[in-house]
Length: 277
Image 1 (cartoon, helix red, strand yellow):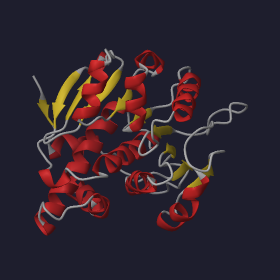
Image 2 (image 1 turned 120 degrees about the vertical axis):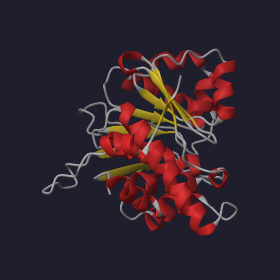
Image 3 (image 1 turned 60 degrees about the vertical axis):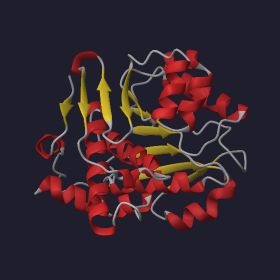
């Protein structure tokens, strides 16, 4: 039986920001997103992350996306892949301790062989760490093609498939008992295994959110919350709630037909205010 995500539940989860906090206080996120031609996925996820309250964001991108990313998201640090067009090399320096507080991978990265190989290498390195992760979009499509890699995901990793991506994982025979499943839909559901097992349903949101980029924004929000130190469970529930409430605010003001993903980011501050008041 599912529990319902309510404003009161979200209000209890949302922590006050310390008065003397600084960007180091609020975490450093790494986001691997956006192949050439899909820079928008990285921009939307990156802006969602920044609007969630994270202290610092590093975007790992192909060089060809540099100018548009630098212009669209000047608040982010840019780290460039060796390949001009796509994710093919390691964004982590394995000679030193990993400094990121959370890592997001997937929006717009594509599923080319060299990208798959880079993802595999990255997951192998992260398998021995406790760094929280959120995987979305093409990262999940790659995992559906290589279901044995799923075992590399640390317990509590958040995955955010839409129904088609989810069906690919199911058809591949992937066991999802080690992850937090955020299944996007009209009423997004969150399934958690382990000590805090349970299923939750978000009653907020609307069909105007069924638009390109909406899921990228959600990935960014969850990533930002993870980097701020929220548990994977709380980051998933709070991220889904904020995202959906923002969508309802936009639908009320602009109508469902005209909603686009950028609107969710621009109204996220209003969703935070609803939860905090």
